Image (cartoon, rainbow, N blue to C red; front, side, top):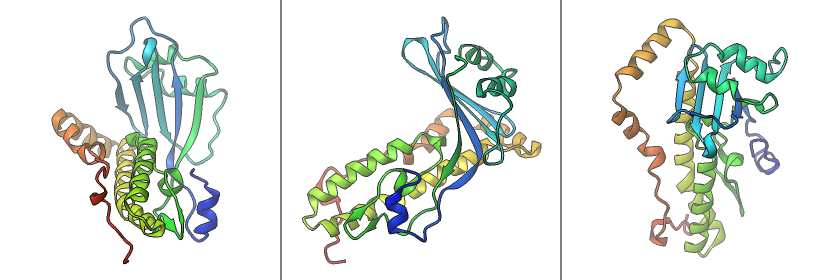
Length: 238
């Protein structure tokens, strides 16, 4: 994971986790009689609130705030959420009213600087140990799954294990680095707090067609696994 002992052992000089500059709350509401029809993310000044539907009328909610690393809250995290977001537009107050007092998790957010390789000898990193990223695109677990699928294909397609791991590294490192950069960039935009920058961001968001926003996600969501062994670069001679 983020603080992988294997990563520290094999790459002792690599930088450790770096704070993204904001903290996050996560929670799930009790069932709602009339839950929002669809998910949403609302941007404020240095704060965000998002939600998405779960089965049974419940909603998964998250919130972020730009704070120094390790900042404690006065009282409970539930009370802090209400203080910060209780007066935001609907459905935020309605969702917070349905959150149990003891059901709020809070974590400071971190990522990892990129490594020069995910492989050392016959050891390969995958998931957060290789490329921990901020959760702004919801891609942390997704990229770990892509890693696992690609690693399996490389080991199946390339007889030599060391060469197969090098092929895995060549396939995965550029993509995960690009996704991590995009996620960090989205977080920076979402956490803007300087009023002129917020106004510019919000105006651009309103003027951007939905189809263009969806199309911009194709490089992230449109991944295709190397199902054919011929798609896997054979690095035996490298």
